[in-house]
Image (cartoon, rainbow, N blue to C red; front, top):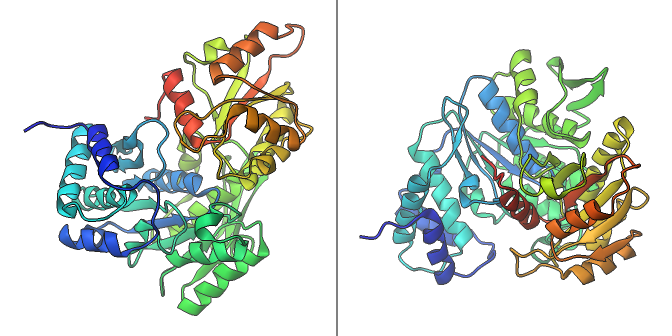
Length: 443
């Protein structure tokens, strides 16, 4: 019998089943029943939804659980470079991405159980997470919603330890609705009767009201940012406050003031899930947290060597106007501490509000190089994206690749100026391509 790698197993699934999402829970429930309902044998689940910040909150949740001396499985999507990034198995050493042999075997077993019936690849891969997490002991399972909430495949978990809903804004309107209240209602679908829900910092009052009303209707104890807990910076420290008192800890390792609220939601959520978090554990978590592709300083590698000497290279996969706003704020903080000319290298997909994203950087970015997104069929052509950037108030030009943009900057840079700060941004597909070409995939 030929043994396939995890990538080969997934390629086979892609050839058999439709791409994309088909929001329903019937198919995955049928499959999980054949597998013996592994989703009912998980460690305490921290279930995360939201438009922006849920990945960071997942990273904070993992760091908090581990800093308290416990172990956590983590399931997130999408991945940046390798499918394995979606499955982190909790171990006493801090958790490891699933091995190829373990992932390939689990995918093969789940595909056999499905027996060729109609299903999406995402649903199969979600079932794989439940199989892996039910068969390997851990103290917690951090599970991120893929799309929406109510009909997302992860929402078969009937009684998580806590639900966390991060900031909600306009995104995936074709699936979730064209008003923020409708999107909030879909995200609120992960709230379960009697299960605590943490409501992160919300940009829109209408979204917050939908979430609070849903929690009240279901009898779910709600912890609301700004009302029941909050976080802020004071004297270079993060101050977290809730009804139990104050925590005075290190600022998060993740860049940007928006991460204070993300950290606060995770602290409130992990505590609500029943984990005791002392001051020392929270401080360790803030220093240890990692989340690839979100305001990440690009590690030394093949791409960095193409940039002007001394340049700062950052990557961020935020891809909607709300994400663009918090990234722009983070860059403004960096500019305040260490002024440098700012350039963007951007690639986006067609389902996003490209002009709305770029508008956040008007008056900040000197120039934008637009590039194709080669890993997605929905990538916007670089020339068209340059027009969208100009409509957002920026100077822009299309180029063939990130490498071309970096070399163009290097070859034309005036050494009398401070070395530039370069943000590669727009799509997680592009972040994955950059990390792969740079030779620095997530570990």
